[in-house]
Amino acid sequence: MSFFRVGEKYQGIYEIEKVQSFCDGELAIARSGSSLYYLQSVLLQRQAPSRAVQQYRSLQEELVVQYIEAYTEERFIIFVRPYEKMTFLKDLLVLEKPTEEQIVQWMKRLVLQAKALKNKTMPMYLLLNQENIGVNENGELKVIYCGLDHITKLESNLDWGSFLYGMLTRVDMKEPISKIPSDLECSKPMLKLLQKSMQGSLDSLSAQIESYEKKSQGKSFLEKLFGSNSKKKPIKMKKQDEDVKALQAVPERNALPESEPVPVTSNDDLIAQMKLEYERKQQELLKELERKQAELDKYNQQHKLMNQENHEQKRLEQKRLEQKRVEQERVEQERLEHERLEQERLEQERLEHERLEQERVEQERLEHERLEQERLEQERFEQERLEQERLEQERVEQERLEQERVEQERLEQECLEQERLEQERLEHERLEQERLERERVEHERLEQERLEQERLEQERLEQERVEQERLEHERLEQERVEQERLEHERLEQERLEQERLEQERLEQERLEQERLEQERLEQERLEHERLEHERLEQERLEREHREKKSELYLLQQEAERLRKLKEEFEAREQELLVERQRQQAQNQRETGSSDEELRKQLHDARIQRENQEQEQLAKQFEEYMKFMFKDK
Image (cartoon, helix red, strand yellow):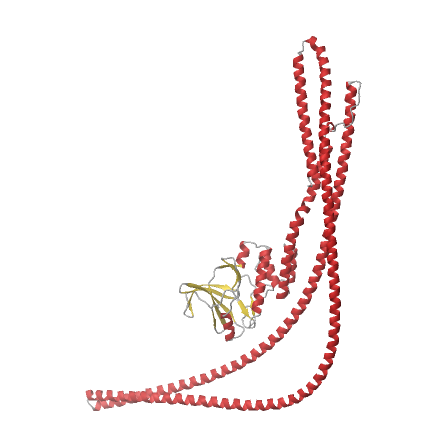
């Protein structure tokens, strides 16, 4: 059944422009003057008391759209709020997927709002429904409806875990879930938060959200410190292998002799000896490179082991903190459960008192309605009787007038008849007023007599109650005196026992404080040793770095010396080659060959070979420098 209809005016003020279903109820947009308003109809479990309506009117919460008026109907309560354009979560989640951090922030604000509503004079609750929660044009989270416990019917059957699952999966949940699906894609902290929120209270849910935020911040910090290094290590080792292979693939002519030139007897012997010396130096250089590679591998292995030890220490520390946090949560949950049970007991007592009060008021209302109906029925019978008498009198009067008209003249009869009718009318009005006045006076008298009888009855009952209370008070006074005597003896014993227990507790606290102080000092000592160890390790690594830099400098000097020896060797080799070619040229002069043309060809070949060797040597030296500096 629709409560609002487009075009109608509610309370003669709000003209309905649009109506839509809203969480088992209706939400209408209405206009009053130049302003737009939300009108919502909500079913009631029982009649709302005036203080409930007043609480809605004075409700001022950050997330809740303000209630400016509340009207009570027969089975409904109607809320009026200023119109505020917003996108509800049901539509927002379809348009875009929020991040986990955004969802947790929404959950945090909603939980705080639910706790604030629960602590009201008349406890209230938040309707967990994506149609009830939205984001306005300023990006602020807003809530349309919040209900009163045991008064409004519109309640959500979702728990906080099912509501959070709906936001993560972008599904409008209508029924709660009993188990989290295994294919849910979310982070581990979010999965843990979802599991804890399935059956948790508001306080435990707040603690879980804070734990999630701390873990997220800690994870981000660790990624900044270690994430990039750990990802780059495999690439770095791969580059090292490639550089070593490149250096091992250097042509033999890059290694030059270091020893003194060996005397030779011929050009061929000199070239052979220089090749042997070149091969020997190449083997030495390769061995040196292999030794450096082994030292580098050893250094990387030590660094990896040190990182593993640090990671293990951090993991153990996190495990200890997690166990401590779980224990604190368990104690907190027990305390909250005890408080919840106490609140439920007080709430049941309050509800029972309200139910009895409501029944009494309902009985009085029914009695008043019955008396009112009897009075109205009597008045209706009296009016019918008077109407019949009036009709009878009119009929008799008409007959009499008809007879007089026959006997007397028409004009005189009419005049006299008018005067008589006027007098009768005035007389009848006077009598009617007197009768109504008598009935009013009689009704007031009866009402006063009834009130007087009720007052006397209440006084009699009050006297009986006072007498019973006096007797009961005397009996209780005697019992109290006896109980006080027994209580005094018991309290004396308890006092002695408490003094003994207090002394034991103080002794235990002192011992516990001493133990905690020792643990703290031990932790400080271990932390100091760890920092000292890290400082020494850093100094050792810096020393190794400086030593490697010095070795690199020596290797550069060695490479420069080898380059010069290579140039000398090539010059000598070129001289020998030129000498041999000159001899061959002399032998070929007879055939008409040009000595100048041969010299030019030899010169061009030598320059081209030198350029190629210099380019290859520069490329190899650049690769060697990259290999030595890639970890710096």
